[in-house]
Amino acid sequence: MDFLDGRILGAVLILTRVGAFWAVCPIFSWQAIPTQIKIAAAIVLSIFLAGIIPFPATAQSPDIIEILTWTSAEAVYGLALGLVAYALFGVVRNAAAIAEQQIGLTMASVLDPMTEEQENVLAIMMEILFILLLLAGEGHHILLKILTRSYGGFGIGQIPSLGKLVESVLLSGSAMLMLSLQMAAPVLAVFLLLMVVLAIMARIAPETNILFLSLPVRVGLGLIMMGILAPFMAEYLKQFVVWLDKLLVV
Image (tube, rainbow, N blue to C red; front, side, top):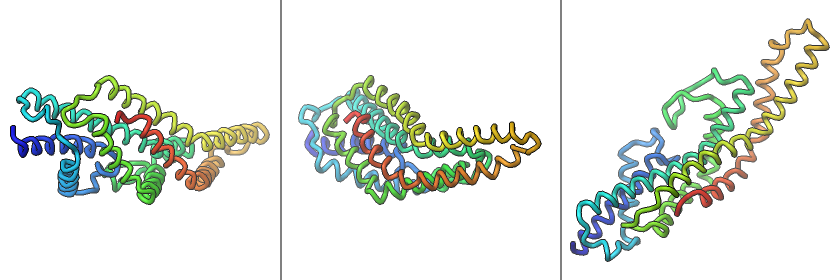
């Protein structure tokens, strides 16, 4: 295979990893972005990376089995990177969902403009706020840098360890649950205290309709707590980058 054919194969393999990464990665995978724009952006980025990432000389004359193996490895690796990023990105949504259960807003849902699915109001609001912080902090550049850096760990023609990829995805799921609980912990603590206060009131004044009284109190207190905690999402943005570096196999 001559040099030109080798570069074309390298560009195709790069496009496979980029396309798989963008298929599940936050921001780039949203349904609100037209498919034509996603494909065009992936092709442009792949062409740019093909010009700076060397195609190994030992892989200049592969057979069809090697090409299929490399393509499958690139797709699996790109999906694993995207799943890790998506799991860490979902921490804010899960934390807001936990808070909504305490507030009592789980029945209220609207159309999420990003995923075009029915989602809870508070989760959408907190996710949009985190997206704005992420874009303001050049988080999309961080994702692109991680994708580019992945070729330093597993270049074109190399097959990553499947065990490490599975471990990375599983650890990202565990980290998502842990970080979600940490983020929602203040809300859980306040509502636990509220339940204690309402229980005491029910014992002191049994004739009082505690259920009717607690509904507006829960909603008001929950919104106040979310307003107080919203500025601290900038701190999670730093943790988001740190956890990406820890979990991604690059």
